[in-house]
Length: 299
Image 1 (cartoon, rainbow, N blue to C red):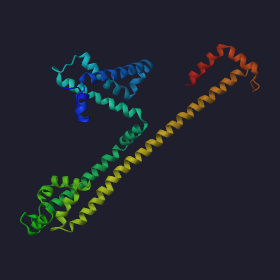
Image 2: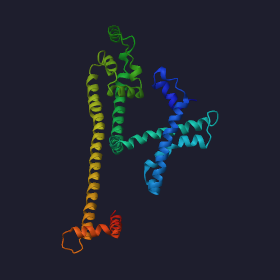
Image 3: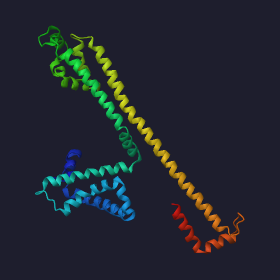
Image 4: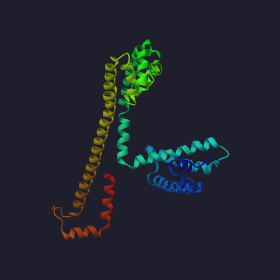
């Protein structure tokens, strides 16, 4: 069983680079493990129990688990093979760290999460529409005797275009019809499915297929994207409002600190600062200690 990175390199890298020794990847893995580990330990030391309230803490811990498990549990290639592979899969949690590093990815993931409820209802509505359309197509096309293999129109179409007319494969059951309709509204070679039907015995089905495409491809699927875009704009607006709120709070603290500083320096209370008052304030360290204590209480 190869190292996961080495195994992936056989697929992603050119043939000339697939002969890289496994120990090279292991050195890189230990190097990044040390970086992540030192960062994690420093964060625990600084923030202490406050880290338990952040979900990212558990993601980082799971990302560090594989190397710890391999050394602590002495997982070798010849024993505990299944457990070893499961532990190695936890390395995928390192990818979640990338999302936390970039604001754009955070906004995108937050938008998808916020739009998840709308996506579920749109998907359910799409499923119901496809199911009803599949029943109709199975009855009208799949159970029709007009598309028999020896039918003259079918033979003429196959001879003219070289495409087999196999309605039993595409429309023979409700499940097959649903798969075909899924292919249809995703526009995946939909003409190869539709043309044999409308150019032989059922040209009126063109109206049905056009209406179905407008309802699904240009309707519900665009509504799906619209829900994600709408949530993305909402999340972005909320993030900007939160940032503006934090800046306003910092500004208020600066104003309070400045006002308190000037009041402490103004010994005679006349509303003006003289050079003597500033010099006296600077020369007394107790003033700085009192000011720092008050600023800590403001925070």
